[in-house]
Image (cartoon, rainbow, N blue to C red; front, side, top):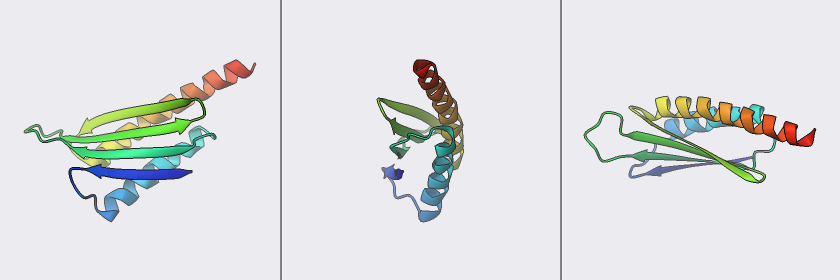
Amino acid sequence: MNVFVQSVNFNADKKLVDFVEKKVMGLEKFHDKIIDIEVFLKVQKTSEKENKITEIKINIPGSELIVKKETKTFEEGASAATDSMKRQLKKSKEKERELQH
């Protein structure tokens, strides 16, 4: 499974990229057919404190799951987005099972 982390409008340091990769790699437990995961880290030019956008896109056969979170830090965003994605992956897996029966 490939994980791509892209930072937009800033350069993410290795520590942040490693943190995000580790978080999303854990999603593999919830769906065994993940093709790849793309993570986009963006900084919005705004006066708001919650200007960090973390977007996770997961490609699975026949579908694409996307979660987007706006938070104060990318770590917080990665955690929140990963939690949301876990729920989506579980739902997707359940639908798959229902279709097979």
